[in-house]
Length: 78
Image (cartoon, rainbow, N blue to C red; front, side):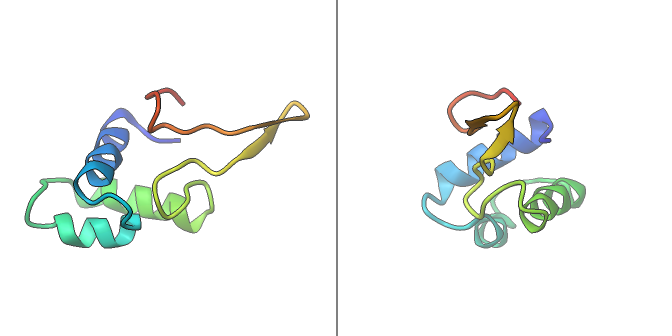
């Protein structure tokens, strides 16, 4: 879902702007962080596709009949 660069960018946004939705955090970070437009578009497209919530957490999903939730903020694994 997210590449290493994207995970690092989202983690930095969550650290710099705690409690801010990702789209707002991206706008505030424009002059502070240097990130590629492609990375920003990919992260925001995952929000639109409902694979990430507005705060950078993976949306819970059903796998093998069990309900699981992955949060890449705790560990950087997919």
